[in-house]
Length: 145
Image (cartoon, rainbow, N blue to C red):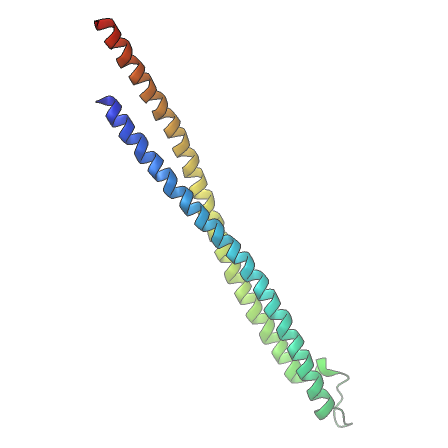
């Protein structure tokens, strides 16, 4: 009967170990997605800057080139500075969100890895106990005959 209990306990730990391994893979995939999201965010920022430069250069050449304005180039016009501030603020906010998500994923991965190590220790211990019990039962049965 002890073998059945040990075997059942061992199987429950193996099941939990498999669940944790699956969760770890999911968290690692999410972490990869967070990396891609960071790259996409940087690409978005660069494309916004490029579009903004092109648009503001056009506005500067058509609207601000006369002598009534003291702007030297398109980077000094109000439309440009306001849009750059908006893009920067949006980028920073999104980057903070992604960083927080990555930190949360790292914490989950660390916690599950620790639990997986503990379970591996328990599994080894229960395998040893199960093996010892089977050997003892076998030796006891040999002594009876």
